Length: 615
Ligand SMILES: *[C@@H]1O[C@H](CO)[C@@H](O)[C@H](O)[C@H]1NC(C)=O
Ligand SMILES: *[C@@H]1O[C@H](CO)[C@@H](O)[C@H](O)[C@H]1NC(C)=O
Ligand SMILES: *[C@@H]1O[C@H](CO)[C@@H](O)[C@H](O)[C@H]1NC(C)=O
Ligand SMILES: *[C@@H]1O[C@H](CO)[C@@H](O)[C@H](O)[C@H]1NC(C)=O
Image 1 (tube, rainbow, N blue to C red):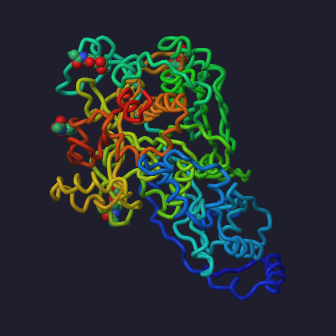
Image 2: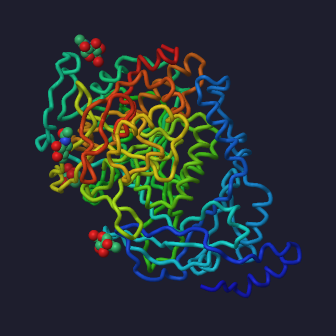
Image 3: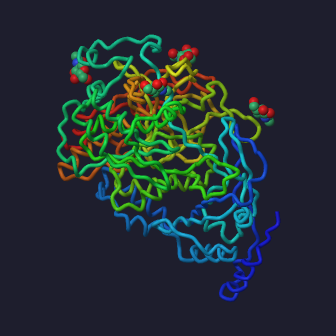
């Protein structure tokens, strides 16, 4: 397509030309091509007047420097360990250069775009334009794409920039990202339908046997297994924990109340008072029970309810914040009202990066196939997570519920248009600046979580469930994995060669229980499963660790992995068995030491405190 500026922007271009050199006129070249993922098909050109909230990611001037700070303040052997950065320090490190800002402004002005705003660090520019203008700006064509499940997105598979901007802009969205971060809770199953894993042996330890029941796993069981039972908090109001909601999910307070009333009565009133933050039009926490229409909608807010029940149940009275981010709205071709940012992760993380105080632990239970996200975008979102880590927050993310691949347990295809088979890593689980949490089941010993396909309480067929597992194609192995991951790969002895990236960031890092959590939703007790459950559970244990640290005047855990891989792993129970069958193969073996199914295993709270010298 030819680049045809409108008359108006030509006029502005003429003015700008007086002040600026020829650079603004460099020819457009393709900046990025990303295959349209499987299951999406084009339904034709997007309506010209459909509105887009476009986010332009400017190259951060000193990201390497930020990363150095992150690694130093997160390394227990470094003198700066725990000296987390203030918001201004982070913003100064990631701000783009003046030159980049000038040239990008000039480009927007010459295209008639004079209204924009910035992220707090000025590393993102937000503009609100229609498809026609976006097509001019990026020399591309947008289409409406439909997913097999009926969802629509307005996207393009490639976009271009004037040559002189290629090194100054990392990514622009929405263009070619098809990410749909979906919640990782697999099912909702009534007690009678329970699947008992083959070979299950009930616990013989009387303490565990008394409180841990496979059919409905409760807070008392978690507290017993992980050693948090009876811990008395001391730093309560100085501490904090949060969780994120996307896709219109939001906590349903009366359900959370019902759960706490059963399992942690003193916490119950908090169900109605914990903080709910709404970002970009995300829904507020709901004070009333589900309406019949809501209850009838598939999985309505189950993830948000699960996260809140687990976190409040485990950590009360630590102050809890729920973040509900709008975006990824249903695309309605006839509605030309402006829509929210379609990439809610980015919206959330840029919001949080601007806060003076961020909760010390934040749990996120949403993932998508890495391949649905263009590399440049995944890298930038991941870099934003690094900023949050540098501030002293531990970001925990579910590893996903589909083992090596996606919900089709037998076929795992890449996006290369040729139906090649590889394992499919998940994002943001694959980002090296987050701590990724896999799932376990059973108690003595805990093993990697796995469940055969079956029929749930809701009468629907549920696919298999295997704790998310793999190696990134986008992110190389981070330094902290240099000891354990090559050793694991070597021990595979060529198994699955060519189906995964042995040089990539392996995940998960740790694990926690993830089968048949007691769960209260629609005013009814049931159970639910998934790494979605494991992530808030592991987050809760770490928030209690922060309590001990804060109460002794020590810094919070912050970005966990450098500590975890050098020292912390000793305080985790190694998981050495279980099934990770997926993608039509047996899956990566669950072994002694780190493995890409359960990481270093499940937390042992008293041992973590001892290691950190704060018991
Ligand atoms: C039984 O489990 C509890 C809780 O994990 C533990 O404290 C206790 O030492 C165990 N008892 C035996 C005999 O292993
Ligand atoms: C939700 O609860 C109502 C009232 O008890 C019940 O009629 C309805 O069937 C429930 N819906 C689901 C999906 O469980
Ligand atoms: C890839 O697989 C899909 C679904 O099975 C099929 O429709 C398509 O034709 C295949 N494409 C190629 C290039 O084999
Ligand atoms: C894992 O599960 C798969 C699918 O149910 C089964 O075929 C396989 O035998 C199991 N492997 C182990 C080691 O239990």
